[in-house]
Amino acid sequence: IEPILRGNMDLKQVKKRLKIESAKKQFIEQTKTTKLKAVVEVSDAIEWLNKMPQCDLLLTDPPYMTDVDDINSFANWLIAGLNKVKNTGRAYVFIGAYPEELKAYLNVNIPEHIKLCQILIWTYKNTLGNNPKDRYKQNYQACLYFKGINAPDLNCPITNEQWAVQEINAPDGRLGDRLHAWQKPLEIAERFIRHSTAEGDIVYDPFAGTGTFLLAAAKLGRIAKGCDISEDNLKIAIERGCEYA
Image (cartoon, rainbow, N blue to C red; front, side):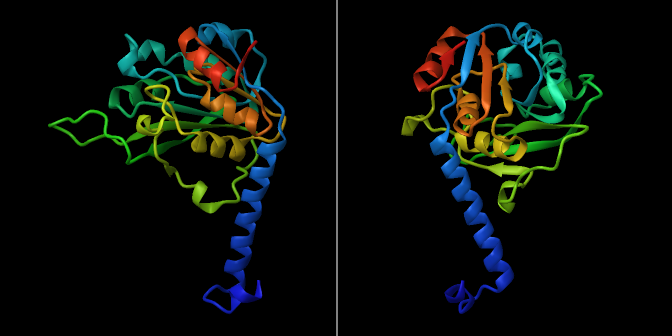
């Protein structure tokens, strides 16, 4: 610590920096020792949820309004999803940032044991998407953050991970790490899992896609289970390290 103190950092800053470095080291070591596998199966999301016991975390990225016939009806899957979260648990649900989609999800009557705390933002600057002429380019997606009424505080020792706006580059096809149109970065999955669960906790993703969220959960020592209606997506998830139920 002494060489740092001779610079521009005071003792309080040094302790904060050491705390952050210790947390990062702990996360890295945790990922090296886990032997858990993410488990997936081909199924409709609601059918799969209805047969499952409760979980500690629901982390998912369902189809957006551009991929379903009626977003108002589709958004009601959220009831089945949140009913499977313990009152000590949490849920992070990524949705499109379209006004109609936000309205549809905010109008869902959610269970009483869990509350919508915030609408988080995931923003990125490395991909453009559509190029509209009458509006601004949309370089973000929304994430509904739910907290069980008896859930403990977030476990987030790294301050800059606790912003409501998470700025992380999207997977990039030019770099070979984008396997699905709406694929989320592994880093944001790992953050939310670390913040809201402990080793051995149960994590669900009923719209597993190519497995990003479940792979992150298993990597961090959580029991990761999910489903997807697309066999093609799950074949990629298996190639990435998931296994069939």
